[in-house]
Length: 110
Image 1 (cartoon, rainbow, N blue to C red):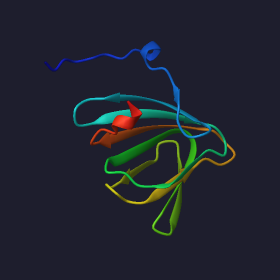
Image 2: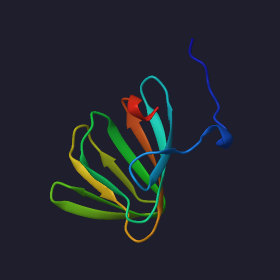
Image 3: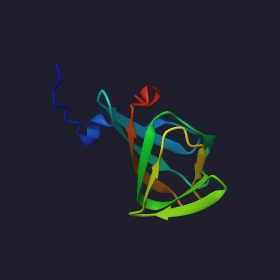
């Protein structure tokens, strides 16, 4: 049976991800949301995944590299990454907070 579930801030504990990053994830059957807090000089090495990814930068700056391009995103900026596109991301001297929407669900994050 499908139900609406409410997650209060106290329910969303940060867990380690790559070195320098912590995150939480909330998922349904077909979509999910993640929240990341990244310290300075955090690196997400080049990778790809089946899930489509839409990232909104809440605070700080996050730089994405893909297809020979590099783009630095700041608070309020959004990037939409299609399925299976190779990309990398990193912070610079400042920390960053961001949310990601994913479809399909990345079960390894739950």
